[in-house]
Amino acid sequence: MRRVVVDASVLAAITFGEPDADRCSRMLDGALLHAPSLLRYEMANAARKKCRLASRKSADLATALSLALDPRRGISYHDPNPVDLLLLANATGLSPYDASYLWLAGFLGADLVTLDKQLAAAHDAMAIA
Picture 1 (tube, rainbow, N blue to C red):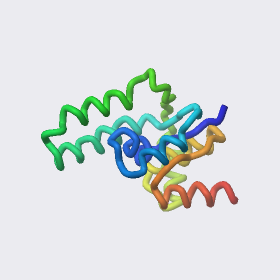
Picture 2: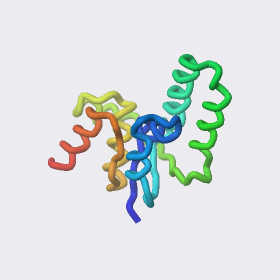
Picture 3: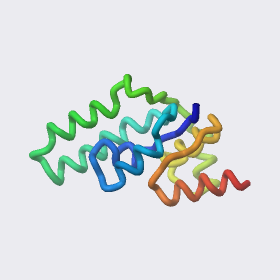
Picture 4: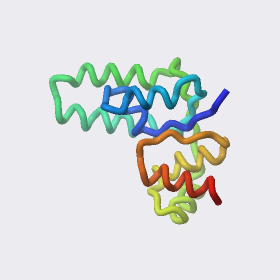
């Protein structure tokens, strides 16, 4: 079975019904999902931003967040070493947050699914090297 590291841009698109939701769902279809533990906090931050824009939808957004992060969803969480993230961030120009997704994809030999163009480009560059 295909292993995929999913980032917050993709999971948020699916969770909150953003325009790319269907395409993102297809990219994850049938895959074993992995993510750095950071994903949970990035998802909470995305939900908070949406709450600020539409406070009347706060309860719905909280429910969607809860469902997305439910352990039965099957996302395996990992805690990359912060020193590794610093080194990778310095080498790629990514933030350590984004580097955590790149590091995990490399560590697992997994595909990285992201809507972040800079992160995708760094992943592609690492695959070529």
